[in-house]
Amino acid sequence: MEECIFCQIIKGEIPCMKIYEDEHTLSFLDIAKDVDGHLLVIPKKHVTNLLDADENTVHHLMDTVKKVANHCVSDCGYEGVNMLNANHQCAGQSVFHLHIHLIPRKTGDALPGFPKYSGAQHSLEEMHARLTMLKQ
Ligand code: 5GP
Ligand code: ZN
Image: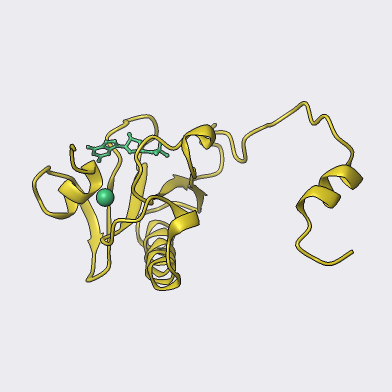
């Protein structure tokens, strides 16, 4: 079976443009060239996505997400950052090694913020009954 592309990047078998690295995590430029400064942050441990990640892996990953996002704002001339993450193919995940996308933002950069969804079909009450984790 072909090995995970991000695991190959971690091992140095495929090159990447590194932004940050520590014992548990790596951040590098996304090759998409869709938005200037599009970054990825990944754990060095292979987990498929956030849903199957253990607590320590999430902890290390989010520490680095925060560190790199703060670096974009404090040191690189940006004002904010979007963080995006897809879990499973149905949600748009195309690389099945956990990653958080960081999109550095500036006022007036003309990029969308939160995706504009439309077309909800059910009432808030129905969706609350389906999704709540609290005893009714
Ligand atoms: P997803 O669609 O799973 O949320 O995001 C996967 C991301 O990985 C995409 O934005 C894609 O451009 C990026 N990507 C895929 N292969 C490579 C690669 O070999 N190198 C880098 N730097 N990024 C990659
Ligand atoms: Zn992997």
